[in-house]
Length: 184
Length: 130
Image (cartoon, rainbow over the protein chains, first blue to last red):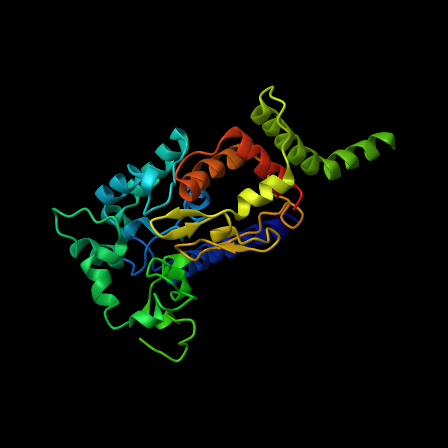
């Protein structure tokens, strides 16, 4: 009987170890975000998603440097024409999240490219002003975005970047509504 | 058995009771002892009234449309907005902080100023019955 228990215990331990190794590999294989990965860390902050994500996509903080987020959060009473004021506690929490996960801290290659394209003296308030963004979208004609009721604005990332909410902005993933055959 | 029924009643009735309590409380505060009667009809008029912003006509309908049972769309970003009518979206008008926050933000966008207590009372009278 005790031999049977020992065998079972060893089998259990082996299964457990196997599951751990497999789980680890699966996580690594699947994870291309953040540190040395290609894609932004996905947004994981309930306050940010609830308060900001109601009106626009909760943009990955890695799109802009910390100084940009600080300035944006300092001017919410006129937020690109909207009033987006927050109570002080929520304001503080969201600012801390955005600044702490800004392009300097995101770790992904995409964030590094945005950061490199912004002059050290510049504090862009719009992602669309950055050189990297402009370069990546220079072949998209106006009628596919501003003139497209399904898109309306370059600020509406998720209209075309179908995995934007997960921090993924790969060319292969882009489908422009109304222009499904266009490839980039 | 009585207790089971009571608990079931609390669970079923809970959210609805909370929604109407929050709205009643706010409307009482907006009335602030005055004799003003809030009217859903006046709320509907305010909802559809437009204000000029340098040639751009803005109203509540710019984002929420004139049918509160349907989803709306953010006027500048195009992001969908869930229906505001509690009859189709029971989460609406259940949280005081949310109601106050959106009155604050949206009155300033639509009118360029905060709404008066009287206007907010009319709005609640209108929205709660949609």
